[in-house]
Image (cartoon, rainbow, N blue to C red; front, side, top):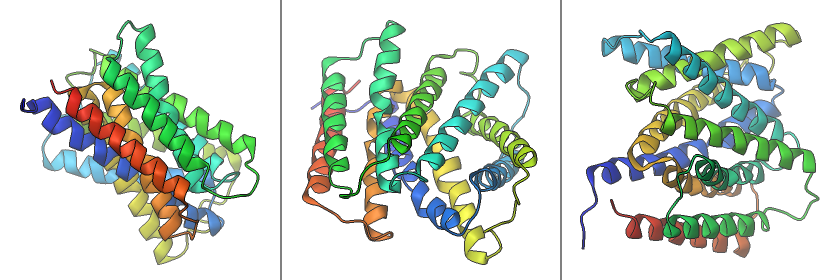
Length: 296
C-alpha cells in the first residue's frame, strides 16, 4: 500500500479541520441573533477580534506584514469574497434553519470543480465521484431537517454564500502572486478587509452596535466565532488548498454540514432523522474513498 505524500498528510487533516470549525458557525451565531444583535455588528466584532488575535500572533512570530501592491489587490478581493460569504450565510439564518443553511453552503465543491474546469484543470474520476456522492449525501440530509416550508430566500442566500466561497478557494489555489504569503498573513489581511467592511456598514446603517451584546455569554460567543469558524477555518483552508488542491479541499468540506447538523440536533433541538444519518454516512464514505484512491 502506497504511503501518503507529505502534502497529503498536511492537507487532508487541514481540510477536515476547516469543515468542522466552519460548521460551528450556528453554535455561536444563532444565540447572538436570537438576542437581537445585528448581522453587521456580529460580523464586525467577529472579524475585529480575529484580526487583533492574529495580528498579535504575527507580531510574536516577528513576521513581516509587508506585501506588494499586486498582492494587496488580490488580498482585497479575497477579503471581500470571504466577507460576502459570511454575510450571505448569516442572512440565510434569518429565513431557514441554521443547519439547513450551513448544509446548503456545501454546494461549493461542485462550484469549485466547475470553475476549475473552465480554468482547464479537470478533476479525476474519483474526485468527480466523491463530489457526486457527497452532494447526494447533503441532499439526503436536507430532506430530514424538518417538515416546515423552506423559504426560497434563505436557500438563495445559502447558494450565494457557497458561490463566493468557491471563488475564494480557487483564487487561493491559482494565484501565484500570493503563493509566497504565509497562511497566517493571508488570513490576517482577508479578515482585516472584513473588519473595515462591517465597521463601514454598521456606521452607514445607523444600527446600535452593542444591541444584544451586553452579556458575558455574548462575548464568549463572539470570541468563539473569531477563533474557530474564522481564524482556524480560514487558515486551515489555505493550508489544505495549497497542499492538496482546491477541489479536494472543497470535498473535505463535507464535515461542515455534518457538524452544523449535529450542532442543530444537540444544541438547538432539531430532529436527528434517518435521512440525516444516511446522508452523513454516504458523505463520509465518499470522502474516505477520495482520500484512499487519490494518493499523490
